[in-house]
Length: 419
Image (cartoon, rainbow, N blue to C red; front, side, top):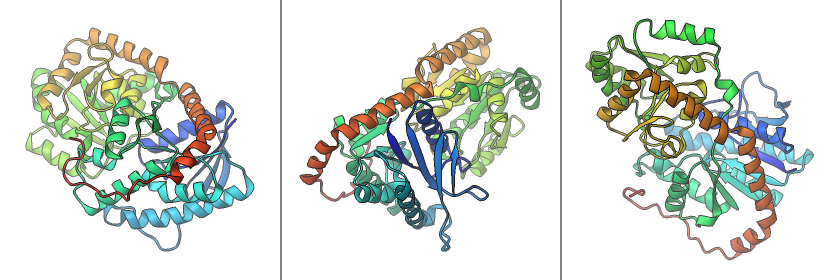
């Protein structure tokens, strides 16, 4: 049994994206298999400051009175303020509970993670879910991007072990953050198949709501440039011409929404494309299950969680062959693939699923079986628990290495870091 102090900037009921769902599933699965888990996270209005929830002790840090908006121009100021209150909440928890290891999720909790590791004299494990350079296709165009990259570099070098979700991400972080290959361990994300299994009635309702006459194509995710939704929009005229009655559902929200809606107007497909905003935990699995094809057109995808979730819902997949997606989907077996940023190839991949519904269902069944065999959360949690145990055992060696570490302060290089 390992006593884990886990740090995350989001945890239910605060769920901004995939990270919050990941940390929740990992924490509860670790507790299920016998580990003692405390998650320290930010407070949500109406939530208790501390509670035992689903076997996990959740400690929430309330926001300090100087309020900084969580937006791009003030993100670093917000992060520093958040880390101050997060550190105090974690130190209070450490007065009452003992821990064996600290597990930090992404750069937003770095200052707290390093402070706690040194103050409590504990080994630090860091999961890097994505990198700032990766999110910008290898570039760090502004001071904010370079600052975030520097914090990621610091966290990765200070941690005793770095966890990533795919072989692609291992390549990316060792290259971008100049890490030893042996320090980085690949443990994939998991998926709870039961959560994504909609009832037959819910699927029928979704089908009636979104596509009464023809085929239905779906997308779910944040509406940001790197998710590639612009390529799906550009492919719609071709798909509609070849598949009469086509409807496309884009579920999610984000800063790119207005630009995508304007692109639909320019292409005269507003009657075909439905922007739903965020769907509830009941609505989203039903929508995905109702699709004849669910598209993941990402330009950058460290893992591709939405592909696993859609497969768990029973949707036939068409995904960009990029990043972690290329490791999940076997072309023509568990999904159709296409090069990212290629709307024509996207249309062909989706069109093949729409044109051959029997084959599409066989592909969906193969994907569902693959998810069950490889990505169950308890198995993933067991791997993380073993990584904790190895880290604790090897910590004396890590400390000795840190005493002789000559890593210079990072100087962010110019140009495309991923070339």
